[in-house]
Length: 266
Image (cartoon, rainbow, N blue to C red; front, side, top):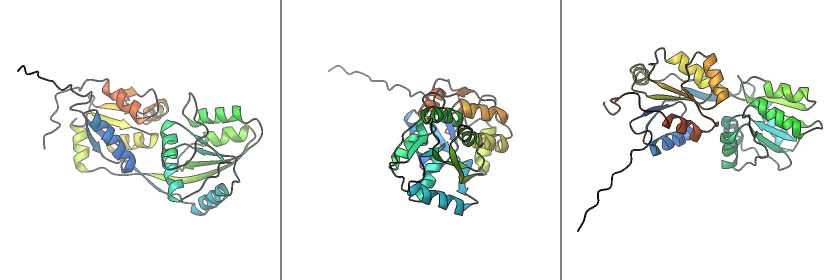
């Protein structure tokens, strides 16, 4: 009887150790995607999200939202979706929802909300404003939920176009110090890639990791994040062509592991 030997193909990221900069369900999902590509995910949350400093304003806005007082709701991050879900906010079908990109849209649909608009080309606040302004030629009542540090690009553009906008802070972003082990592994090059998934993450990477070897791949989730990262002084190695985790991991997978690292050493 003739025996045939089957050789298992190496996965694109076999041997890579990749830093995942956020924890929770999001971090778990990214870690699973990395493992599927052969990588060893290192979940090291650099940022976390804290409640808004003006809870009464948020509560009031969400009550009005549930009553159908807004024609549109704009969502510029998956974290805002978490805030809506945590408050068990019901959104009437009469209120249209605009999501800044595919990741945010997926977060909305995952918890049962509808999505009416995702920018076709420019997945940014500016891109979303441009598309909404083209779509709505008459003044509309719009609620923009945002992070404390978000620039008011969307709100300003919509107001300039004649819309009635309520801009409310939904959450604050705070830095989370990583462990000494993570600091050492980044400095020594045992972390082969760092996923940079937002401007807030970029700022924490720059602040917390004083020494990042040239061999460490810094991967930005999209052009907007890459721009923020470069402003923070990070030498971005690769930029995903779409603002999704899958596109980000795919971008990293096109690179060759820079050295035969001791990834599995204690």
